[in-house]
Length: 442
Image (cartoon, rainbow, N blue to C red):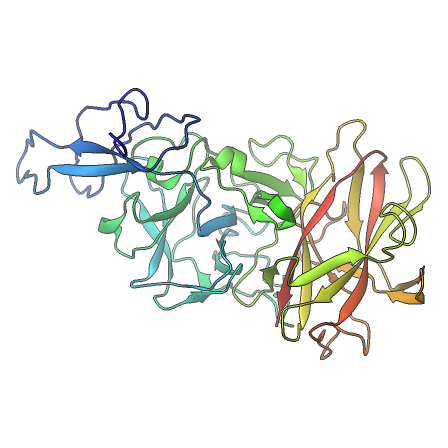
């Protein structure tokens, strides 16, 4: 009947033995779900345990109910991570993202960040905790950092730098381990019900590793010392960027690197870009109704000057994209940050432009009916250094121009606008895409 899953249509019947070795406390039972195109309510199936054998073996609860739910993006997600870096195997981090328009408060217990252990053969271990009562801002982040974290100088947007993040990992992740976030703090309470998100690597697809991944795993980084990270992709339905969450790690994430011509472990062709970890103090994502964007000169086409200015020709020169941003948040904004979540920056196929973000200085432009206006430059944020230019997940901020809004001690008032340009070096000519998320700090 309605709400009841059908074997062979909604899931694959599963049976077998669950064997606990000495000292083991957790096991998983994986039930394959069969996706279909129908629009259905949540559907349930039963899991039955029988025939306990062994010393001290007793079944206290012999039946559980599994629920197949509609695939909707999670409210709290793992948005970026790496398991090594230039600083060594402890140059790791895990960024958590609040994918909602309201703050999320951790509770009623701490939340555990859990990693696989001994391949997939041992009980998972808690490698980090988000303390009970912690508030993750709307569209904001929480950052775990490792013992050799090297991006300590990355700006938070409030005039400080990341340092050690919001919490230091209790233990470094280890090479290509699976990682899961759970809304419980006790290892014995881990379950698919308590799971908020998971990311898996390589062949970690058995036993408890299945609890710490979603769908097809990511390719191994193999303790790469490149300046890389795995970044959750973004889409822009209704032009409001949202993280992808198809419950499939391989399609939800992309690996970026500042040296994209060099493989990252098993990832032969990373995309040009940069790790960009953010913490709770970093600027939070805004919608177009909060930070409105329009053409610098609405009277002319977006591809025409002064909205877009091209220098040079062929596979050289630059392209400058100019826009006006208006603060509609209801209060002053002290910092703006722009994250590239879609950009045709190397490698680019023939016919597609390879454009790479670079810092620029202030300039002027003539706007129809207004006259000459100042257009502020933007600066590619470091670290990390980006010798090949900015790409996916790179971020830019307005130049620190004295006495101008969004400079030191000069907030952008509610209702006030700022003209900005984003400058790109052209490595290969062709059609291009550039999309940014807009983040602001009150």
